[in-house]
View 1: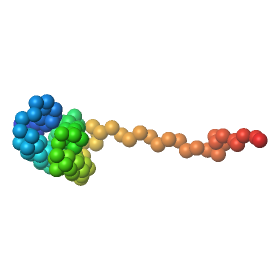
View 2: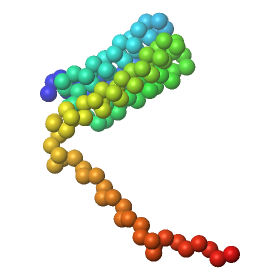
View 3: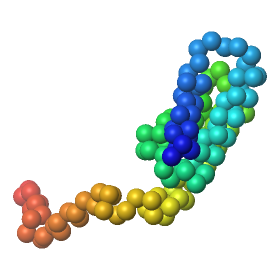
View 4: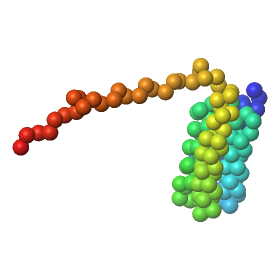
Length: 127
């Protein structure tokens, strides 16, 4: 439980939205380390216990970093690659997620739409 609380407490968003610029190179090193930390949180055993909001926050932070105009090309590329890796991690752990969350807690898929019958299709307009 403490590991989940710790992983959810990582406030990457606060670091990304920092307004005052200190040492630009040092700021980028910190952001790159945070990007690495986001992937580690998702890959870890407690990654499947993170809430949807926590995971979404990690995605948003990486997306913001990838679009920062003041960031170097290396930082933006690293953030973009982190986003791609995060997608692979999340979808690669689908079985882990399903094992942690019984099927009774998941919403069933919506029913398929009824098939269209030949009589229900509109007739062509007369010339």
